Length: 239
Image (tube, rainbow, N blue to C red; front, side):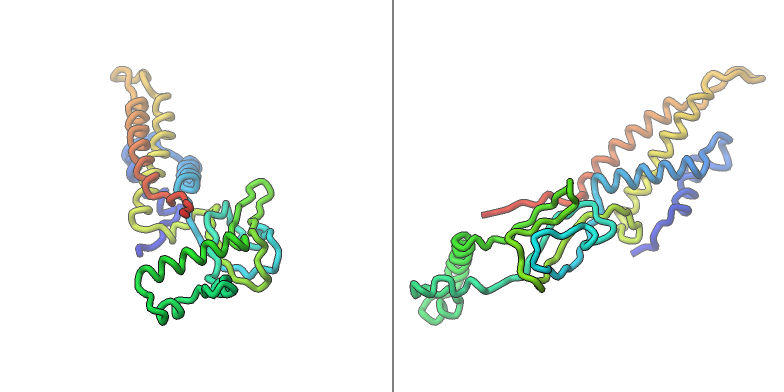
């Protein structure tokens, strides 16, 4: 893992890529900070940084965002501990959902696993014990249904509102840095358009701001497609 890229180092890198020291019309640190902030906003919107915390439930179905994390944007997944409370659900019918019972009565292998899973899923539907969750964006609450027992541990995966460059992979660092450069190019191009067809002792001159802006937009579109390919996949249910 390479060292984290700081905002100061990123500003220096962008200035060098934009020709600092050679071309007199350059960006200020404040303008570079706007480009970096734009890149961070885009990264949060399209990629995000998932984090996971483990919580101990208190018997209520609502968990406030403050009880999850201080940098939470939204919850994307909740994992519950595996329970074997349903293994005796059909004991009244002499159909015990127990892998050892199946094996020792002459059954086993893949069919045992399939039948075990089918009985467990049917059992959960009968007693309405399927554990589910929902993120209430309006009230900023994590809703658990049915309400879990107190003292139960659940894992909560959420997207952070912050972009921690220390957690970026090498590929992500490269993409983020290039996207910040593109945003700086667009700002600088807008500035340079003000210097088109300016008179001088040797005739009028221009700084090709329009061409630079067009190149930045093409590069931005290319990077956007690459960045979207690494975003978290949308969760789905099977059954």
